[in-house]
Image 1: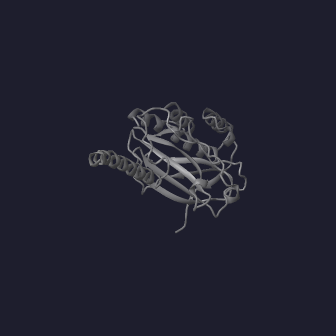
Image 2: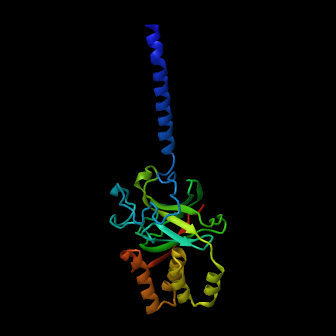
Image 3: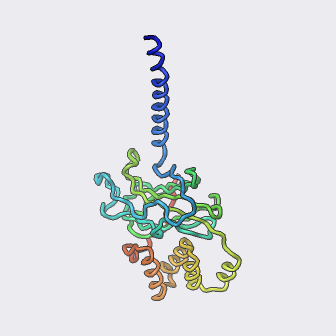
Length: 250
């Protein structure tokens, strides 16, 4: 009888150890955003992300004036945008978010380490806006994928209510030939070269500057429409520019 009990002790202890390890893993995974621990696949052209947010799970949060209006990230359909900029600019179409709500932007490396995070204030207007990484942020490494997210924080006590978009950015090396070409081209021609070189962030930022500036013309308008048609986001083509996302005052 004693031998029988001893025979059962080891399996029971082994099962307890497995259950304890599993519980620790579950608890640790709940302490970070769901996507933070996703490891980026090898440099492939389709990466997990979300360009259009889902609706708030609780319309009573009055996060936005029209619940049907989503947050939209101006990104290619494969969720990956390339750039030659050390610190790129990210573009979004936002609904009219109540001004007492906060917006959070973060950037992770492919290992899930948070490299940059910023809390921003809503303008209260619906339309296009952008966020540029500051000079104080570390530059992106060349040929490395980074995952970013933008969340409208509807309820600080329940982050499951956030309106979130997320995607990837990859900085690539600018060849000497490309830089020489850019130096000789007009702004309109530079945009075409960025597009031909698959430099999404650079093309979008340069074109947005022209399209929403005082020098916009029919040609620029057509370039804008064509660029957004390539990523299948027709709902943002006519959205007005409502200014830069500002940091939350200290």
